[in-house]
Image 1: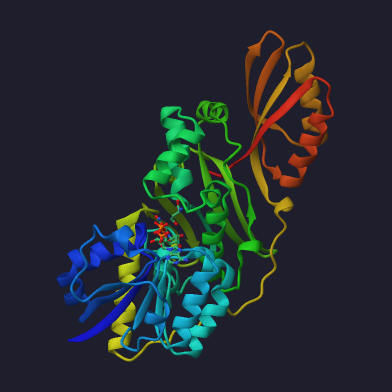
Image 2 (image 1 turned 90 degrees about the horizontal axis):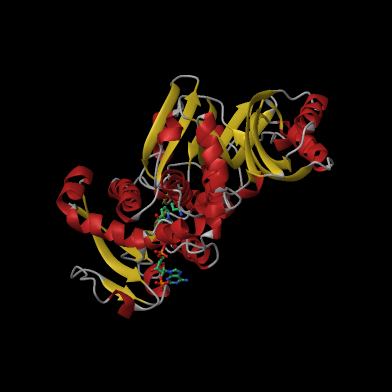
Length: 429
Ligand code: NDP
Ligand code: HSE
């Protein structure tokens, strides 16, 4: 049986999950792939930090990346460090040295994916990235292989485990944002800099990768319009429950005759929609294709073993390709240029929370402003905060985002409006 030697770069959350699965399921992996996968080197900055982990006799720590890229016996480099500078240098160097690469690094792919895929193709090696999007959910290969015969028109999903964990805890336990973020970090869900999670950047990078495959276009992180969850308040979550919604950070990509729309934003999801019941660090994605109709994929979007599971599946696939001398047959999947649709034109219903003077006639002024923008009200709830202040939570009819921006300006121009506290989109049921 052929032995394929691999090197791990980094030995954190995902790398240790990968390591544990390769160790614990070694027989099963060998039987299924027909290849023996041997961990040969693990690149770390400080081996002392990992002295509590027993390595197999075949493996050793190295602290110089050249000991891996210049080692001709290593077939696959598994990049699990994260970041876009040093990780990019390592991936680039490995590909140029004729090694296949498996990575979980969506930041790197969203920024430099097209360049690296072209490089892998030129060097006749593989570059695989199943773990980079939706952790343990096998979605990348599903999109380009299993759904390869479909024209995909829309994908919408919960693509970040950290924010879904935070929003679920805020919704179910009424906990504050800060307390829950710390828990998500301790559980290994959050990025090294959790700003990437809570500001929606991580989800945007994942959406860029998924949309590139789905719509056959080079889509970069910069093409996605992004809004995070840092302004979401437990008060909004409570009003949302009253209206029949759960709050979620969603990524949504659509193809219409006018072009592609690519957005990440917090949205109220109707409780009747399956995405509303996706809790904790779980992720899910809904895909519309002209053959499959609707399909939904659900699973753990982050964490050591779930993400390791996706990394191991890529290692197995590449190892089989190496055994059959068929690496590099996979041409990068970009062939179309498509227009990106302006976010201002995207239509949605909206939830708006306002603090207003608790006086007669104020509601009529609010209604007039809505009518001026041709926006109707689907529901409204009023709670009196104190004798002088009333809080209005309004759900509007569907309208373009630009109309809502005009409406907010006109609300702010009213002296009886103390504050427009929140504006949140409502996902279609
Ligand atoms: P961790 O922070 O847990 O681990 C990163 C590892 O890489 C550590 O061992 C770290 O070493 C090492 N490392 C980082 N930078 C360098 C460097 N410049 N030189 C040498 N070693 C370095 O990260 P994760 O395992 O969580 O994430 C790894 C990748 O997987 C990221 O791209 C992330 O986006 C992606 N990912 C993570 C998921 C998750 O659930 N955590 C899910 C899906 C993808 P040191 O200890 O010395 O800092
Ligand atoms: N920080 C990411 C998340 C890890 O929370 O989803 C998985 O990519």
